[in-house]
Image (cartoon, rainbow, N blue to C red; front, side, top):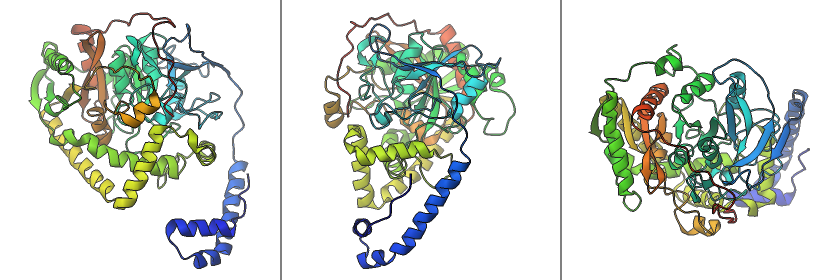
Length: 517
């Protein structure tokens, strides 16, 4: 596709947008044309080195109904890919639809990306295949991942396996449901503010947001690159180790011991700190859930850990600090640079960005309400403050990380609720719920802090409130992901093992509500 010549009206519009002298901009037209020619040469050079198209694979759209009563599946695939005897040999894996799987439509839960099919696997999917894992399909996610609940996807709501009338959590909603109901061994998701741990807590499974950067993000939809993580959901804590062995980079400190070796270390004598600021959120925390997590934290003493109280004062303001960084970073990454971001060494995905950019330009009405909220809010607030408040938030982020590190010198892991409340009912009108309530964001208080700091955080099923699962969050020092998994496995073995959810059918009560566009 060639770039059409810019007209005098185009130049005048840019001058008006930036408050520039229109006469000067008009005189710069020939220089801008030379830039346009350069862009054309770069496009041609890139086309010369493009790899051949991979062979097609069998992809089947899963209809809602008896085969998928919770609305969790998007596509099933029949693609054995590479086979091997690695740590994931023979294990079944689903992939959130915001992560590229070659030959499978990657819609991001949105009408904007309908029809986009990636030609190659994301880095994490490639590693899973190399380790013997079997990619069996893709799972539904929230529209552009702009929700921590499960009612905004353009494909429809995703019901909780314990009560389909309630939220499964999000934005990796379908992944958690498919793991909880035994339809896959692993669910790969993305986590920007809790999007793996929210659904893990509400669906009664384990959800790990690893140490920042150890699982490569290439091929997943970015929102704000310093907050974005690849995460994983499993039914059993011990299964987390195989995923880390298969997908994670070496220990950030340079140690050569395997994740399996670190997992095998004895946990007796470790110190757990109940994080005071993670409990009792005004207007949001359910005191019964807080009590369940405190009781579960005290039960760690039965595993040989010592338990005490610790404090991270800025934790109480984590959601405030997260917001400017998230929305202004998202404005730049998602909307202004068409899902590419700037000022980084890559990777970049031209077709992905072009598809998204053209959709936004031609069909802005398909931007979800949550995306419009972020886009308009970030534009107005960045323009009003010239980015100064976002810069303050980045400074506060450093202080928050220092406070968490200080607490983790006193103890070896922090304990707090994954989510302050049980899953809420799915709303009858998703659009109005986004506009007029906090349902898409109410659950982020504790989880988003550790996207800011990059520490590994693992949601562990620890009990029930009103028949709905409760998640306990374990947080460790960077690189201690396997240690968290070992503590969780011991807890699962000796304190609480979440049973499978009841079986439901198409008539179990899942709303047929419209998406929250």
